[in-house]
Image (cartoon, rainbow, N blue to C red; front, side):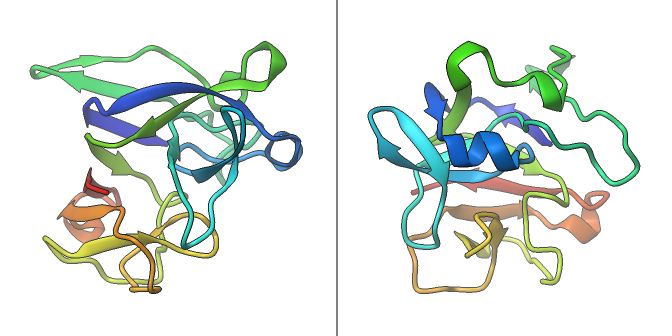
Length: 157
């Protein structure tokens, strides 16, 4: 799940058959593999992340939702994780800019994060602070241990 505080650029993309079969959580990083078609990212190739997940639930089987905060007011368009892909495999990709918070499914929870630390995309197509020799995806603005296990970041790539 992703909480969006400052909206980044949004793009409508077609999701690859591979992703449709496997499913993903909100915050999954992807790359372009064809004409507006995305698949799971690699550590050296990413275009942005999926705003909502598809086909998966969190470990306690609760549905996840997207929350956007604008000018101090919370706006919750109840987009459940298993309903995020429209006909023909169309979904929403976030890229280029924005301030987001990612839950435990969208970053490497084995690492300890600190403020202003650079973030990268790892081999599992989620965020990490381990420099894998790849482009920087953004930097930490809120460490999980200080924010109820949510990793806050500003996209900057």
